[in-house]
Amino acid sequence: MNLSLTAVLAADVAGYTRLMNEDAEGTLRTLRRLRGEIMDPVIAARRGRVVKNMGDGWIVTFRTVSDAVQCAMQLQDRLKNDDGLKIRIGVHLGDVAETEGDVFGEGVNIADRLQEIAEPGAVVVSDAVFGLLDGTLRPSFDDAGERVLKNIAKPVRLWSRGGDVAGAYAALAIPGFPRLIIQPVRTADTRAELTELASALTGDLLFYLDSTRWLDATISQDNDPDRYIVAPVLRARSDVLRLEARLWGPDGRLLEVFKIGGNLADAFDWQDRTGADLSNRIMQGVIGAEIRKIETLPDSLRTAEQWMVYGFAFAGQSGEAHRKTLDCFAEAIRLKPGFGYAYAYALVILMSAVSMGQSHFVQAHLDKMDHWAAQVDRLEPEQSPARVMLALGRLIRTGDRKAVRADIRALIRNLPFDPHTLFWSGWLFLYMGDPETALEYLPRINVGFGGEALANAARGGIGFAFLQMGQFEQALPYLDEALRQNPDYSAAWRHKAAACGYLGRTEEAAAALEAVSKLSPDETIAQIRTRSGYLDTPGTRRYFEGLAKAGMAPG
Image (cartoon, rainbow, N blue to C red; front, side, top):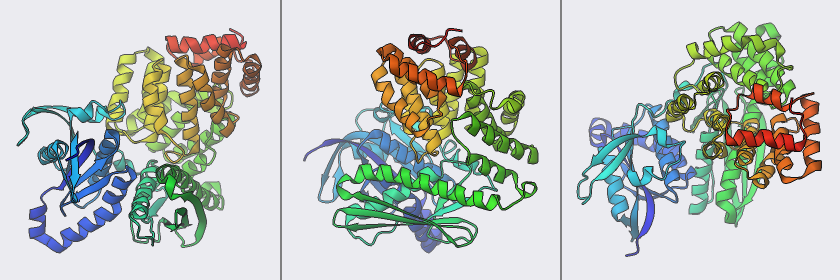
């Protein structure tokens, strides 16, 4: 019997026997729905393989520990906000053997024992699993001590993510914004790799499209006259793939048809690219449809939520984009003074503009910063992504890295998959001169996960992290791509100038500084140091020294 070290997820429906005795038909109907709309897509999206299906329980194997744990967490997040069944999950890394359609070994046995002691809605992982998680996932788990497990010789140290943590972000959906039904990706091809790919794409679409609070997305076979609907179909001819998705408006009109080709030989990478790309296109399609509707209304008839969506249409990294977005968000605040979400995003945009040297563009809103921060603190829940900005304010005021790290840990515990929490936490570590930790956060942001503007700012952050680490050649491709996507990204121009200054590329450094001068005239190193809020660390000193080498005036 050949054994291989494998990440194993064991899941079981809580109280299944009781539920079947009370209502067998209804329980089976709910189980089928949850399998089709939540479990199968989420498992497939994380490239899990169901190797054993017991009806009310599953054994799933994964290529990596991170995939297994993220799958477990996302399953519980989705199920917590569903009125259906609750499950218990255990995850372990151990030896596994497969034979004759069954699985055996310590990895399976311990994972199964862990799910048995988990509370409904919880995830329990072994120490072998916890030790391989990065800083974006570890804070969600609490030390549950050592336990002696049935038929396992040695005690196992456990870590638990309770049901009270699960689903925190999904609970933040806000009424008044667009709603979207994602129909499961259909395919007429009966090949297992095609049906698995269709499920994986369904899971990716849900993960990406429900990652923003302005769009309430859910998977369903049903139609709803009040929602946008995206209906994707995966076709294949031999190994050639074609994904076609139709986006319908709430009025039943066909708005967009998206077509993406690929090849089955590249299925995993194609899935990653396609899930992100299609999600971004759908988000832009919804925003475009909403903008067209909003622009038919006089300003006086627009709702606060519509002003927010209108502001998102201008999102970017230029000063003019920040100004237009803030004007819209300020109008939303005027119409709805208790709208915490509007204060949150207004604060994000305003602080971004200031840190990027664009204060002259947003001068009309600068005196509102403290008020907006106070309103975020008062109105937004403890698990709101906007609280990262309050942590940034604390860092700038006090320089207290220990307190800010505690703030980030508390937020990421409840919001490990929220793009804005990950993004701003990554940048906070850059402010603190900790680029290694920033690189645990920022690479998780892609074009589908929060949109192109956020993904591009993350690229710039990755480049800045390598700059702080002294890896100038590694920094430049990220900075160049960020600038290709947005030539008005002033921070990326500064970071490129510093990297080229160190590398002795004088012409490129001078060109980068010229671009900076056009976006932020007469800027000096002293001005950047004062307004940025960066702490004095080896990494941030390296940045300012690079600007000096590039030829920027000291002040």
